[in-house]
Amino acid sequence: MTPQAATAMHNKRVGYFVTGGIGLLLSAVYLLLSREYPFGTLDEPGARVWPTVVGCMVIAASLAVLWEAWWMPPTEQFEMPAGGGAKRVVIMIVLLVLYFGTMEYLGQLVSSAIFCLLFMRLVSPLSWPRMVVASLCIAIGLQLVFVVLLKIPMPKGLLGI
Image (tube, rainbow, N blue to C red):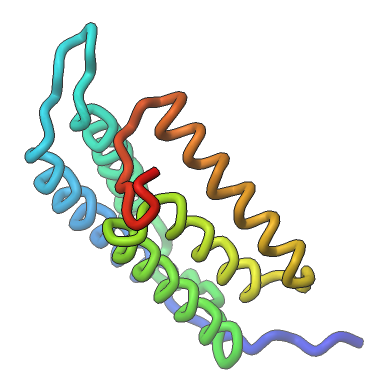
C-alpha cells in the first residue's frame, strides 16, 4: 500500500476565475512591456512580433478559461497539493521567478542550465552527473532553437554568448 499525498479541496469555479484573471493581467503587462521593441516589416520581423503572438495566445487561453468558469457548476471541487507537495509547488514558482530574474545578468544559456539543474533536482531521482549533462543539453538546445534558428535576441549575460 502506497501512502497518499496530502491534498486539500478547493472550489473549481473560483480557481478557474482566478487563473483566467491572472492570465489576462500577466498578458496585458507582457504586451505593454513589449511595446519597447520594434515590430519590423513583413520581410524582416522585429523583436516585438513574438511577444505579441505569445501575449495574444495567453489572452485567448485566459478568456477560454474564464468562459469555462462561467458555465461551470459552482459546487465542483478540485484537489491541490498540501504539505510536502505544496512546498514543491512553491519552490518551483521561486525557481521560475529566479530564472527569469537572473536571465538578464547571467544570460539565457547560464540561467537555463542552472534552472534545469535545480528543477531536475527537485523532481527527479537522477544522479548529479546525469542531471548536469541533461541541463547543459537542454540549455544548449534552447540556445540553438531561439537564438540560432528563430533569431530571437536573448540576454547574453556573463559569457557573452
